[in-house]
Image 1: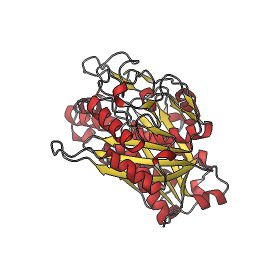
Image 2 (image 1 turned 180 degrees about the vertical axis):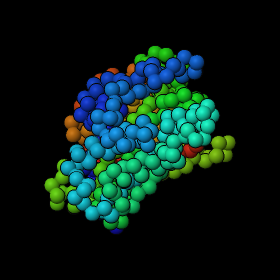
Image 3 (image 1 turned 120 degrees about the vertical axis):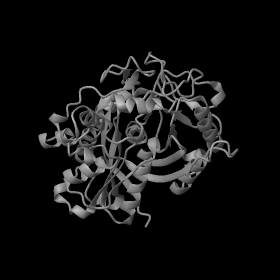
Image 4 (image 1 turned 90 degrees about the vertical axis):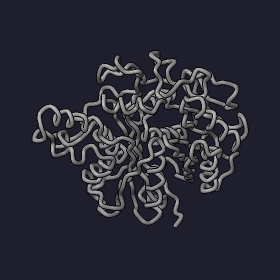
Amino acid sequence: MTASVVVTGLGVVAPNGLGADDYWAATRVGKSGIGRLSRFDPSQYPSRLAGEIHGFRAEEFLPNRLMPQTDRMTRLALVAADWALEDAGVRPQELPAFDMGVVTSSASGGFEFGQRELERLWSQGSEYVSAYQSFAWFYAVNSGQISIRHGMKGPSGVVVSDQAGGLDSVAQARRQVRKGTPLVVSGAVDASLCPWGWVAQQTSGRLSTGDDPARAYLPFDARAAGHVPGEGGALVILEREDLARARGAKVYGRIAGYGATFDPKPGSGRPPALGKAIELALADAGVDAADVDVVFADGAAVPDLDRAEADALNEVFGARRVPVTVPKTMTGALYSGAGALDLATVFLAMEEGLVPPTVNVEPADEYGLDLVVGQPRTTEVRTALVLARGQGGFNSALVARSAD
């Protein structure tokens, strides 16, 4: 079945805005949420900047019974799901339980919860470890808690593919809708800004060690020296288009195409596979490269990875033939949440006809990209390509198209 699958609701939790409206108000004008990490003292670590969400109080949105059993990541995800459902005009309690599913992604699971319970194990003993540790740390916990909260018993699951996961989960949700599930909550939220999670992230060798928020995360710039990590992401509501329109739902746009590949083994002499993922996504969407109005790039800010992404874009589109933007320069790389947040940003960009900027970057000529920098660019956005890559070789490309 190839039914058209549309997005009818957005739930955003990001370092530069809580809720889709606040996030877009900041992003459209280039307002950054990156700063020195405040959750703990980062001075002893090589990296000290992060895209941190401030002002979020889960107790204002969630019942007290959920507090002891949830990690910060899951609390953010639960609130994002609530906002997405509200935005879509969906009341889950009024729908058949098996007509609703949840497919999310996570790159790390509930690291902060896990760290706290391991500290109790080591310092006090096993009898002091919370029983909720059995699932609160797990990659699938966001899908589980969302499904329980809203009584969703349809096809559900979790995808683990690092930063590519946010797009991969939406693609899996699209498959479930096409197979007959009327509604699926999908996307990703990650949050691992705790000492345990911070140490794990340092091992990648891809984190910026700069202390100036305006100079630390610079994809496609000659000064690029790694990314700034962040927390947050987005969840979206996917529905079959005919059913969504029949109930009078607002339709943000369509999930039109998807492609995924895996890079060959380093040293094999074979080229990276991102370009193939782009070609697969365009073919799946039934569009040509010339139809794409903007690319939301992965933007690793690691020179060889930036080179590989630029080469893939230039091979498919030609040099400087399509606008490219990296709005995550305002939030940091949110791991699995990155692609999902970019997808939500695409639909907000379509509504206004405006491409948000890549902040602080001075694009290097060698990459041959038409990078949107400094100021937002006013232009019609009907077809957008979103890219995401995960460490280890994951490549994902997703094509979104406007509703009309």
